[in-house]
Length: 327
Image (tube, rainbow, N blue to C red; front, side, top):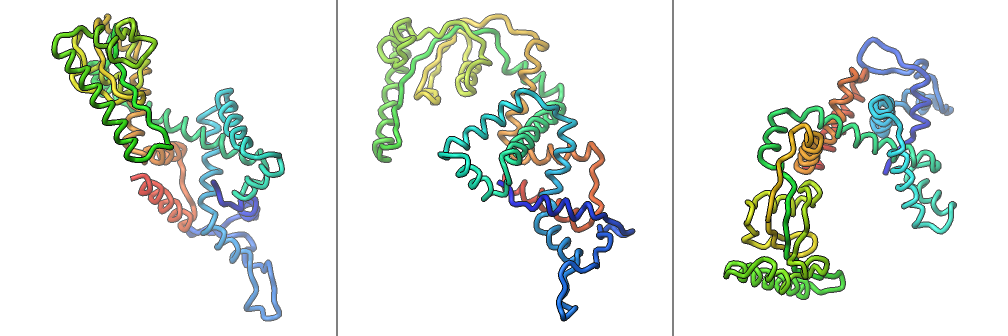
């Protein structure tokens, strides 16, 4: 979580800054905060400010400016409140009483629950703002390409599922054997299809999906966008009347899909918002640095400029290090 002396940083900044060079100096900063008989040992306000600025200044300033910007970019909403409530409640479940919970969050630099809620709210708004930024920068060419290549009409399809039951208590050998058994069985099912058996016959014989096997594996008619990514991509590759020639590994085990029918493709306008969100998800999944680049661009949009050269350097180093950690 965070390590911060926010209240102290804010106090120092409130004292005032001045100076013509690109260095923020405190008004009356040379005044001593702590004195000794040997005046050479005295500690001035500037001494404290310089240390706090280096250690905590940039992280605190980033939080302050992001809150100001994101309160404009992302209005408060019921969705945000529900997210924050869920996160706080989830944490509290680990502690028997309020005192234990407060001790835990105090250890991470939060003085009370309200500060913790502010933290969750800020990060959620950051995520929403980055998504908005990415969606605004999805170009028409990419949207049209996705529409032409991947959007389908409603599908009538079937599947054969071979479950692979792996538990944490299994040894590595047992896990390997379970996957090998699943692979053998799904390949047997594919071979039966290749030999001319109908999909319905093979589904009844092999499928572990009790909800569909007795009906020949029929999944009904559905929109591909309602499927998980792996299953959706498997159906995208199939022409009407085709089944998967190789096993598809999904979160449920190994599957074979069959595309019986495909309806009329929806118009671009009907699926445009879905395409934009999907492309944004794909961009973030393949490049985690985009979350930081997006926030940097949002700050620039508001004319963000650091007036202190030390803090400017700390900011650049901080953002570069965050992006490197995601490479």
